[in-house]
Length: 272
Image (cartoon, rainbow, N blue to C red; front, top):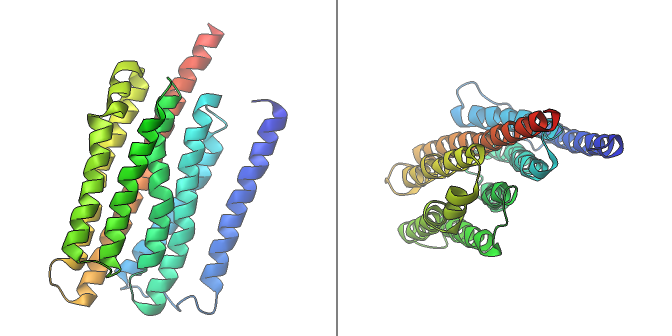
C-alpha cells in the first residue's frame, strides 16, 4: 500500500471510529437513555461490557489492516465492520434494557440481520484470498443465514409458534454447517487452502458449531422452559450477550491470526 492510500485509509478508519464513539456517547447521555445502571443489573452490566469489548475490537481490526498484505485487507476490514455495527446496536440495546427492563428483540435482530451474513461472507472471503471460489458458495451461506434468522425472529416476536420457529431456525443453521463441513466450501478449503488458512477455516467453522450453539440454548431458556417472564428475559439476554462476545470477536481474531501469518510469510519470502 502506498503512502497516499495508507493515509486515506487511516483517515477513513479514524472517522469511522470517531462516529462510533460519538454515537455511543450520545446514546449514553440522552435523556431517554434509561437512567442509571444498577450494580445488581446483571443483564445491563453484560450489555455494557460487550459494548466496550466490541469498540476495542473494532479499533484493533481496523488498525491491523495496515499490517497484512492486500488480499487479506477485505477480510480484516469486514471483521472490523461486524464489531462496529454490533457495538452501535449494543448501545441502543443497553438503553432499552436499562430504561424498560424489556428484551430489545427488534434491535438485536436488526444487528444479526447485518452482522451474521457478514460473518458468513468471511468464509467466502478467506477462500477467495487463496483461490477462485464459485458464487454458489456465497449464496448457499446467505440462504442458510436468512432462514436461520427469520425463523428465530418470527418465534421471538410472537408471529409464529415458538417451537415451530425454533425448528426453522435450526434447519437454517444445519444447512450452513453442511456447507462449511461437507459442501463445496469445505471441499475447497481441504483441497486448495494453505495450512494457515485451513487452520483458520477449521476454527471458524467450529465456532459456528460450538459458539453458535449458545444462541439456541438462549432461545430455549427464554421461550421454551415455562419460566416466569422476568427470569426468562434475564436468561435470554445474558446468554445472547455472552454468545455475541464469543462469536463476533473470536471470529475476527481467528481471521487476524490467519491474515498476519500468511502476510508475514509473504514478507519473509520477498526478502529472501
